[in-house]
Amino acid sequence: MNNRKTILIIGFALFASFFGAGNLILPPQLGFNSGPDWWLVALGFVISATVIPLLALFGHARLQGTMLDFGNKVSPLFSLVYCLCVYLIAIALPIPRTAAVTHEMAIQPFFDTPSLLTSTIYFGLAFIFIMKRNSILSILGKFLTPLIVLILLVIIAVGLFSSPESMNASVLESPALIAGLLEGYQTYDALGGVLIGGVVIISLNLEGGVSFEDKKAIIAKSGLVAAFGLFIIYTGMIAVGAMHNTEFEASITRPELLTGLSIKTLGSIGNLFLSVLISLACFTTAVSVIVGTADFFKGLFKDSQTVYTVTAIISCVLGVLVGQFDVHYIIVVALPALMFIYPLTIVLILLNVLPEKFASKTVFRAVVLVTFLFSIPDFLGFLIEAEWISQLKELIPLANQNLGWLLPAIIAFIIGNLMSTKKD
Image 1 (cartoon, one colour):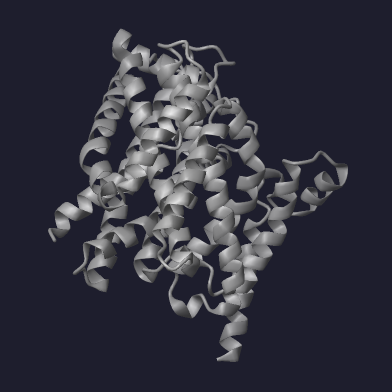
Image 2 (tube, helix red, strand yellow):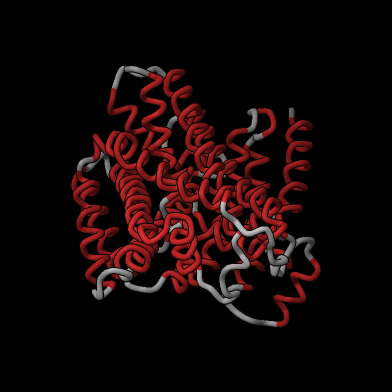
């Protein structure tokens, strides 16, 4: 196996897989709303949408098992329930969103066809790719990603060098760094890191003849390739959105802004380029995540190919049904689920990349339990409007910024390590 070539192919495939869940529509509007503070927003966004997913891949490189291994130190039952929640959220929200984004940005501007037709054809094609399991990384890494990157770099380069001199002030309601951090949740990239990392492990195992240490190096280095690509694209699109924020109405939607920027940077052919980009980027993520979900359930049922196929079918059918809704609706509906699952995912990723002496079972259990408990007000706050929830959030540091779990998790980590030290 040519390790250098393999690293590049897997790195490109990871980049495309992380990037495509409708994520292209997020950074421009974030920059548009932040104005001169775009760099702070970009920093927060990169932390949650690039650094955390990269650490998830490092965790996979270290564990080289399945996603179940991320939570086994808490308990096997917790790990199973957590994995089921992640996979359910993945196939119910971000994957259908890829079809909705494709329809609104790549189909609707050119054809007067219903979204049901788009999502049906979209997931029909996805199913064909999903069943070509053994060649999926090669297809994504060799052919689709280079085209995506090329189109994006052209939009960013032209956008940066043709921007107006003036810039509107920030209209963000929360501090720029935190706004970027929380918007990064909507990329689902942290979930993608723990999910798609498992796809890479299985793909390398299918190749055969790759040692544990070689797999560790390949996963880590390909993760760096993907993270570098995400950093350039996300930061570039945030900057372009900020630098052109005087040229659009304040009420502009995410898809409209991205379309407008593509036309301003690439001219009349911009929409066509953007349509190709959106279709490819979204499609790669849909295929990768459904493959990861099918792999997981296949492993639970003694490597049953029937289970793999049934899971793929169910995922595609769900994608067709939910993918009919508009993008804004799917983003709003996703918020409670993200407030529930994202904090747990972040702490599990961080704990799994720390040295063993700082991440004992005691520490895992304490941090995860505290994170779960202090995430409840954030989760409930997006489901119901109640005065007692607002009062509770007033008592918890950072809770009004939807980060009420952060300080308690850090304290639990410190106390858990002190307790582990005393036991030793």
